[in-house]
Length: 292
Image (cartoon, rainbow, N blue to C red; front, side, top):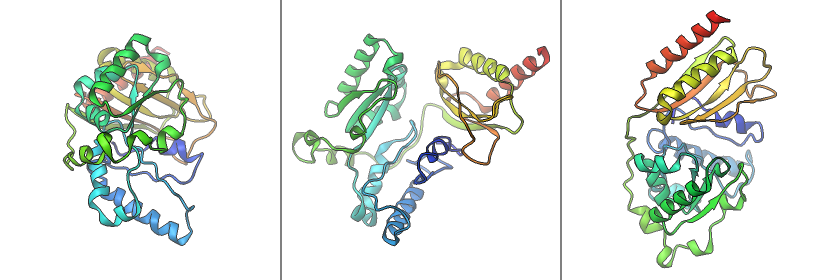
């Protein structure tokens, strides 16, 4: 969801087998790109130019409706002969999940269509909040198994293996429930994405003050801010990640993942015009520069 990929650049350092589908949301604009990418992978596997893979992991943004993606495999006969959807895993933020489920139709769809629900960031939430979130998820989807992740620690099998209890027969059958979803997706609730870029290195204090101000003013509507910063005095990029009111500690990488050393931040917001963010960050940066 957005025109600039961040996660693919971070992951590519560990593996070259990463394909970015940019310039749109996977459940809307780039579904045809997904079909083309999967067909290309099948051809490359036959030619021996990629490893003989048995599984493909498709990671979507937090705004994707899984219904149209699953519909792709059900309606594309060529893809259906090569692939089937083995398991749908939905990650739920322990710190913001309850609130998001209340206002976001996409979040509720993701929970309802999941085979497996993983509550993340449990180290950042109170036990009572996690219990309430778990109860809400079970009410939305009593068929899915619910797991928790602490500090990102999760059994990898949770992401790739189907449970015997979630077979395609009996009362837990998945296909009828999935097939009932319309293969069209339209994002609602005033959600939009945009990218801020800056070629010149940024003073960290000025950026931090800008983000603190933005979080204080519009925290609940900052659905996600993620990207690389070229910070004055740092050799590698500084990775920043903000979800609503929660700003994760910045991480300086040892080296840039690509040749592009410009700062680039992807914003996914609700009812926040891009111009407001640009003006605010520009004003705070100017004040910080003038006072230094």
